[in-house]
Length: 433
View 1 (tube, one colour):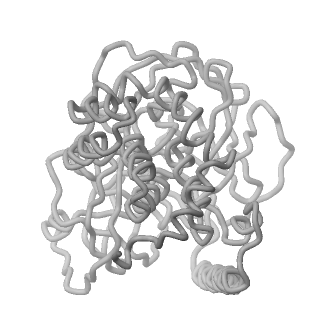
View 2 (cartoon, one colour; view 1 turned 180 degrees about the vertical axis):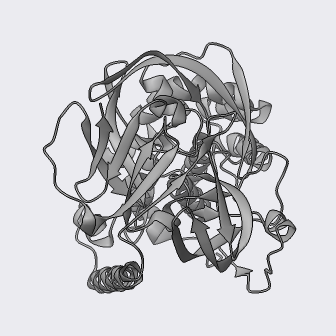
């Protein structure tokens, strides 16, 4: 048996885990909920997908996995497709492929329901797996059985290394911020799709971009070359994904960015080529260490260091708690009277829900189809209408888009007309009234 396949002892252990309450819920009762919620979207995605589901429901997992693999050759932005594929390999006791597909689902789609279920299944199979956005220490504490001594040693070292890295990163950021102004600002104009368009300088060359708090810093190489930049310092970087869910290879290069009254040097990611609809993105990497206040009507963003912020009296109607995860600001709000969580995405012109969340909140597609383009290619969205409440702000019969692979994002259409501040020091989204 190849090295990539678990030995029979581990296979038997996995079978025992499969019978446990946690994984049993993942593979049995949960699969019904996923199917009911995603059913129409899944069946409409692709003929191979449909045939795979039919075979899966008949428990013909060997046949089902053939169809799911065919579907994956055509589209890779559907978390449920990856999850079903993992379940098939799991039932077929192909542990190597099961782990691989679970891992792809969990890492590529961490905020979706299939992603969370895949992470739980993989963690039960492989105790060393650390789910996205979760520390090693919390993962170890969640295990139902005590890991072996060697595993404990590995986890303790990983935790220590993680803390050391975080401390080093914080120290480097503090050192950089010491040389930057306490406050800065820049102006933007609204594009046709509601995007926050900005004019900035990259290594002294004028470049156009979108201010996108859901992104880091992404510039297309062909556009930078056209602007006259020398890209000889570029090195291979990690892949990146957009709403289309397809990984795009990039190069990375340090660049001096000037936007408004702030200039700082950051690493920028660079996909090779852009299309007529591709736009450069400037976001979290540029404003790191600053709070930002957006005046949607005035077209201005004010930046202020955390140390320069002042504690103010809170108003529960206009001061909404936020949670910062991987540099993005998430808030809890209600959709059709049900609690939801989403991140604030100034780069999204529309508010977007993934298919699972939309079904859970009772968002019914109208039949209107919207075609969009972004990092990773084109994708198709469906229109629906919901009631949204964030603190004292209400949006009745508000239009949202359903689709993509990025969970739930609050876009510019929801924030239109408001002046608001993301107070990272006090972890609040603050609306001014």
